[in-house]
Image (cartoon, rainbow, N blue to C red; front, side, top):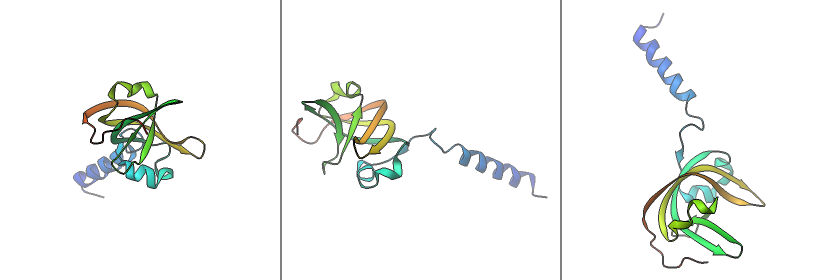
Length: 120
């Protein structure tokens, strides 16, 4: 029989492993979401980028300095932060028709974006 302390540590480790599903968002850089989108499909993630938009049709996304982009849904969640650097948490999806998208649950403003243009 295992020592009581060892058994407790093992039980705690298993409990933590079982809680690691979608309950805690994993930090994922835009580079990874861009390069391996299927690896994160359906996962709750946290990522950072500068808010950008296109007028016709109106849509918003975040991008990094290498212009790797993820669409933000709903766009209204970031509309007032155009040109600002933000940290977003939400459910990431990817498919051939819609591309890379983040269904936003939380927005945190980090500061002004480093690039000048708001429209691409």
